[in-house]
Length: 390
Ligand code: COA
Image (cartoon, rainbow, N blue to C red; front, side, top):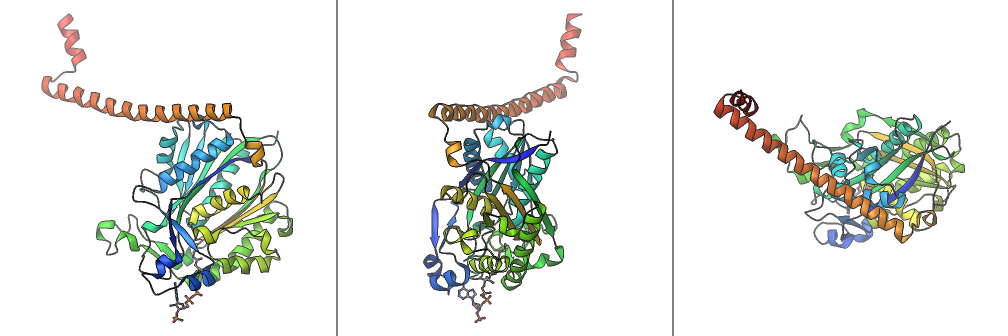
């Protein structure tokens, strides 16, 4: 029996703090008019000090699992796409796994910049279709405000923070994920970068962490306008479709002008190319899942619709996929009783995670006591007790 991977849940979370163009114009030589005209962005969200990629992603993940009515204890894989992970190790996916209490899930991060979320959807769906998994949670989450140079008017106007997530689930019903295209070109690595890693230890880096993001806007613009068109065509082809068969294209929200150029070259009317860029700016790996959630909420995605997703980013990387949408909000309007059951199961899963952390600490303590006892007495306590008994 053929297996399919359907999107059964979706969720998003953005920080509360809104930074408007005028706020930036108060400290930098720019204006609301320039930013809106050149980028289409009106405002963006900025994470508070206590918020991180893991905490934003966790909130989005919880919402997606609630829509799917999937118990965190049954999640099998968590893929987190981010360019601003909390740490290199542990990966942000493990922090989200712990926060959810998804004790049966494998977890890892995807470092493919703004294309990471679509990479994640293709990987999760591919593993489900191959029969290796029954479900996967794919999260895109970013706190780009932390790595940006707020005194650089060419980058600080573009980026924002946020998170989005989808749940993919196996089914024998045809539909869901239909195909994908993934690409990379490392020869363009210098066009956009966040250079931190073992090659450039933070201690020896001359740059403060808030000025790590570098971008050659002009080159990225040229690359993006070309690759959006090519990947949308390739993604549609991989699904056995033409671009015109897509009901809605959800592109990476980078710049309104890039979206306009792509729409024109693809022959798609503006209404078929979704954008919420004005509200959030470019949230990198979070931009597509955030746009999915907004488009569903706005009633622009209906069951049976063929939805294209297409992204490009640093690396350089690009990715596109096509999904036949399965559920509308009405299908996911769970009864109060079912929602309460989901909430209590999620609470139990979270509590189990806390207990598991406590267990690790107790085990470590027990081990330390045992070793100290061995050092002091030369023989393990059990052997001494045996000798005393003889
Ligand atoms: N406000 C006012 N003027 C600005 C400005 C700002 N925020 N940023 C740049 N300028 C100025 C430049 O200094 C330049 O001035 P000059 O002509 O006196 O030298 C002028 O505006 C034009 O600069 P340019 O870089 O050619 O502007 P642009 O139209 O290419 O727009 C970007 C700049 C960054 C908005 C645009 O290149 C872009 O969006 N690129 C793609 C970025 C992207 O998508 N990144 C994410 C990849 S995932």
